[in-house]
Amino acid sequence: MSDRRKKYDSKMIRKTIRFSPDEFASVEKKIEDAGVDFTSWARSAILRKKLQTKLTHELLSEINRIGNNLNQIAKAVNIDNKKDVLLELVEIERTLKRIADDC
Image (cartoon, rainbow, N blue to C red):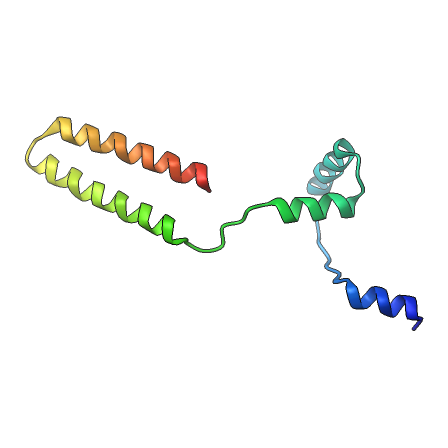
């Protein structure tokens, strides 16, 4: 193996990716629109994409708040306080929208 090849192989990690024909047609269009080669486009797309892999502390707190809101709604329904129920439902909707925007 040449020195150049050893140097290149020791610095780079190579991965293979597979696409369906439709997926790759979409990728090719995006590459063409961006005016770059596949490697540059793929590296940029992969590195800038925010993926949520596990529940964060903040998300768990939001879910707990929603659970508390649901408990309050159940209690309000049992005592027939419709105004409070509607206010709680509005608050749940806002919280869910905020969570969806963060994801």
